[in-house]
Image 1 (tube, rainbow, N blue to C red):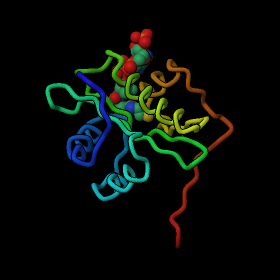
Image 2: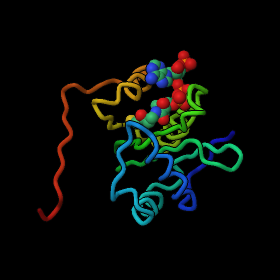
Image 3: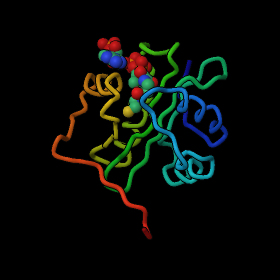
Image 4: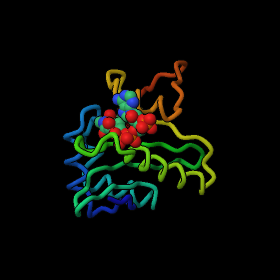
Length: 139
Ligand SMILES: CC(C)(COP(=O)(O)OP(=O)(O)OC[C@H]1O[C@@H](n2cnc3c(N)ncnc32)[C@H](O)[C@@H]1OP(=O)(O)O)[C@@H](O)C(=O)NCCC(=O)NCCS
């Protein structure tokens, strides 16, 4: 089992893992084209965990020059509880730290109680003063 940088060749296995992971919402932003663009814009910051040539964990990580963002952390159910999720997150945070990005944000569905427990245990703080808002440019 090893953690390595994600490449666009991983897309179909990674998308399948995300689609089969409770607590992860996938959409048009997860197309091969968009993930390719994301990986190019944020080189070397997203990771996969691999066992027997199969992808069993994945996470997207990027930054906007001042804050980092993690998305879609998932570990296949049979491989949970072995600190793979922790290793994937650590790899991302090390990458952000090396680039001088001082803080990282995540988006978690309110209903994802298991995911929230994982993040809380890892020391992530909830920003109860903030809500996420969204708009389509041009609308
Ligand atoms: C969340 C997830 C990535 C965790 O992956 P994992 O590899 O099982 O996590 P780890 O083994 O690294 O867990 C690290 C620690 O958190 C604890 N932990 C993990 N999930 C937990 C939970 N639901 N409740 C309480 N503790 C939990 C582990 O017991 C471990 O504790 P330890 O250090 O004392 O041994 C995995 O459960 C998953 O893919 N869930 C579905 C997708 C999801 O919700 N992702 C988050 C989206 S925001």
